[in-house]
Amino acid sequence: MKVMNDGFIYKLVSGEKAKDIFALGLFELYIVYNDDTESEIESHKDLNEAMENGYDIGIAVGNINLINQI
Image (cartoon, rainbow, N blue to C red):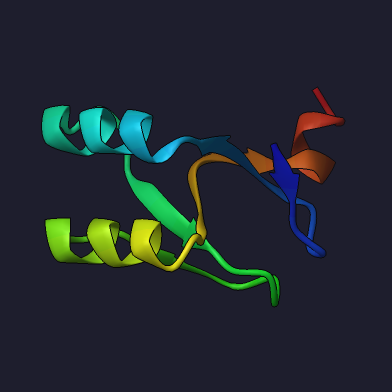
């Protein structure tokens, strides 16, 4: 898990898991950068570049502030 400065949570997945998730279209995947930004993975090229550069890859979970209100 990675919690961003704004409280948004990403479930991090390995590159191999990300390949499977992307191929099956199970969830939207995001590159989660160290500067607390993210970008959606929209293509195999995006996914491969993320893996080659060692970036974290994650699935959006939600905002911890909203989750804590439940």
